[in-house]
Image 1 (cartoon, rainbow, N blue to C red):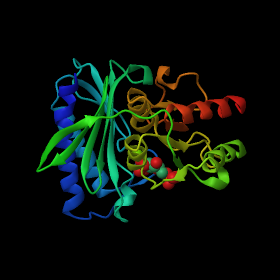
Image 2: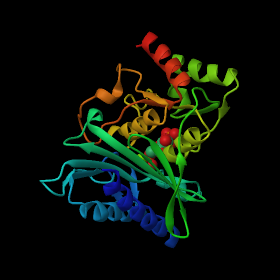
Image 3: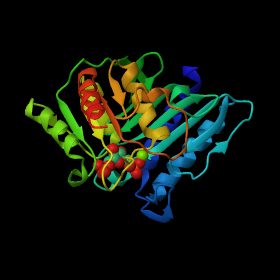
Image 4: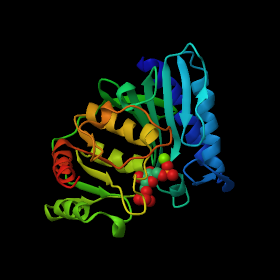
Length: 282
Ligand code: AHM
Ligand code: MG
């Protein structure tokens, strides 16, 4: 299965990198389903992904963070692909790293149907991280992606990436975040999910958290495009993920394509702490 998606995603990554580099296309007046103003660049990247995925005969349906509805590609296909073409696109103005995220589901949406996940980081370098049974890192050099290595996380890290508006965090969440800092964890948060989670993955471990808050009672990050793909990638890499609610978030069925959830990703140690704290405060 892997090769069916790896090559198209490599083409997508090169085309999106070109789109980012070519010119600043400014803001459009449209909003996406989550109410964000869409950049013309978001729309262009969405069309690039749509075009490339439409060429794969085994793709049944696609869903994009930038499209209100899912789109049928081929009724005889078996893969359902959810993607965020340009995550963190507002960071382009300040020249920080951004990414694309892909979740590949078999037969239907839902965490339990995910069979592979992948992201691309557009930073000083362009990298692809692809997880199926292992997590593999590829680097763009001289216009070709080269396999670099497999990624395995340590059992415990020392980075802490706490998302969401702090004044709206539940008090037990603040206590947990502070407890990591008191243990010597260091703050690493750019506001781009892809580079923030990439940093924790590549540097061995730590915790990225985005809790439910008063202003966002169901978190911010989207399950199909963002939360499940990273949960899958972290688990395949020897780390873990949790939603603070369910025994195993990766057994969940599908509800709404744009549904959001609180989420926690990290090495096994940090996620065990999250589970303990959140089970106690459920
Ligand atoms: P986007 O999909 O509209 O770009 O939003 C998702 C981004 C993530 O990359 C990041 O983790 C999160 O929003 C940051 O949110 P906040 O600014 O609330 O910390
Ligand atoms: Mg996004």
